[in-house]
Length: 107
Image (cartoon, rainbow, N blue to C red; front, side, top):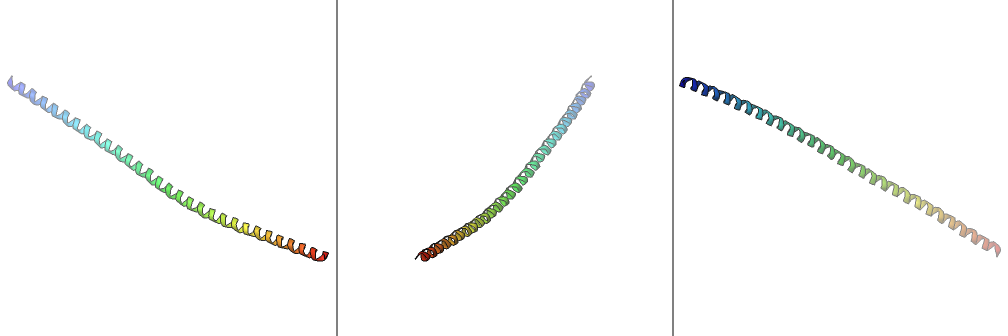
């Protein structure tokens, strides 16, 4: 009877150990999956940050290009403005010359 009780106890202990080992394996697997998930998230985050960095770089380059374009446009406008002023001056001078010639012809 004592022998059977000991055998039962040993069997129960073995079952308990097997259960604990299974539980530990499952916990370990769950942790591994969790770590994988976190690593995936980190990789996604890195990729997103890289994309943002590229976008910022492209945006800065576009801004630089726009500034250069703006400077060129201003220079062209300034050039045109000078040309217009030169034409106005020329017309003004011609008008004064004509006016003076007319005055001289009257006298």
